[in-house]
Image (cartoon, rainbow, N blue to C red; front, side, top):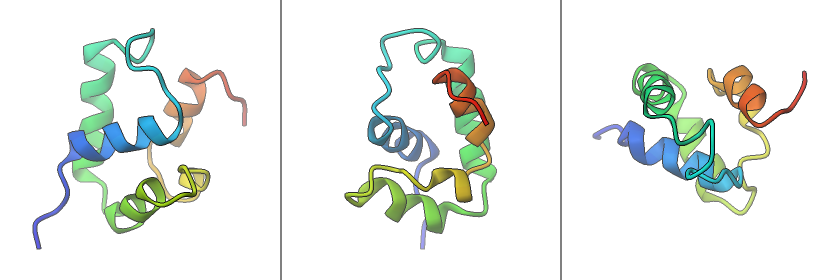
Length: 79
């Protein structure tokens, strides 16, 4: 089947993580485009879709998402 749209996946992920897209740094178009590019080439979409559409709220994204470090940094989380 057709792979999910990268922009929609990213929007679902950010919403599940409670990110406010109107606030910096998440309102920076270049940053969002970079994250979407990673989503487009990611071979783990099959893990992403259920993680961010289920009630889990994306808690386990660190286990599979190639954007983990970027997202955590942007949200002020430390590893």
